[in-house]
Length: 459
Image (cartoon, helix red, strand yellow):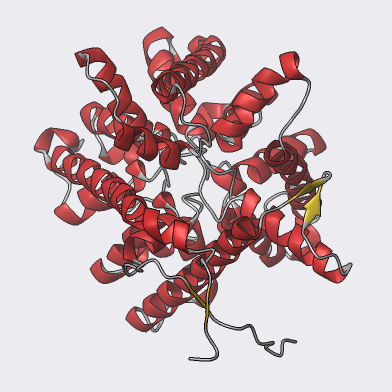
């Protein structure tokens, strides 16, 4: 009893609000699960397949992959899905990318229902917004901006593709790939058709449009709003500055290694002209972090390039964006914390701002949970398929967790249990490690007991 001091615990406030956080997390989980269920039923319909109905396993996997904007497939969407099936996938990508919470706000607005306090808290958690004022209007603005960007991207692609694909087909394919690019989904309708990107895989115009959509979708809502308001207030938040700096750094890092792919045993770029090699390398680097749209055979890249892609996928994009992964904010916070510790500073400081200890603790939790999840799923898949090669399996797991969609072909060879594990990983990755940790956490009663501290030996 002498070792206890009765002072208000710094976690008491969090504990009082944990039931609401768990409720919001549960709504997110149930909402995404319901969308996947509806998508599975629609894709199971006979008219969803082009030459045969999809099996329940195939329909569930594709619905999960589309809703989580991943892009891993067990069929070839371009040839195995009918127009109806492709449209179902497109709608699932849009809902999964923008978020069913945002569409719920739109529905509430259309039917005249007022968004209550509980919905506002849920929207803040889903979109990563810190301020709760006028949240419904903000959500509708995000939806409108998202649709506008996708339409602009689709128009830009259509103007380029209509000359070879025709007006109607070009418009449909442009819209599908604009949505897939912006939502960082990785689904395409050119794989398996014999012509990569409809013959535009070396076209700088097409690749620039798609890369721009991928980057915009991966930056996130907070960064987008911050950049748009910069004209008036002339300031950027620490989150935005960290995101932009780390995004540029990761692109430079990825391009440097990918450009030297031949040195590390790769054979993809060896016979390409310099210009084609530049554009395909750049597109692969941009797509590898968040999108998964593939215009080069990933399995023919050198191991160093594949490792670079794995690291990029695991990091992912910004929070409250179309991308997955542990997010760049998590990595940035950990790097700043490590730098401050090495320099002997009592607080983690960046851009003349102190990062709260709670933020550092969340970053550590996200990184730890993500690492453990990828390790456990990898071990489970290796146990389920003892003859499978290690690299394709771990590559597939990280791709599923980060909702990227790049593949070395392992998913196609997995059995039902293996595919179920990959689907679970995609689901977990889209919701975010922190969301499910909050959901699964045991209820903690508020406490005013604070125990004395004691050093633990590290290093």
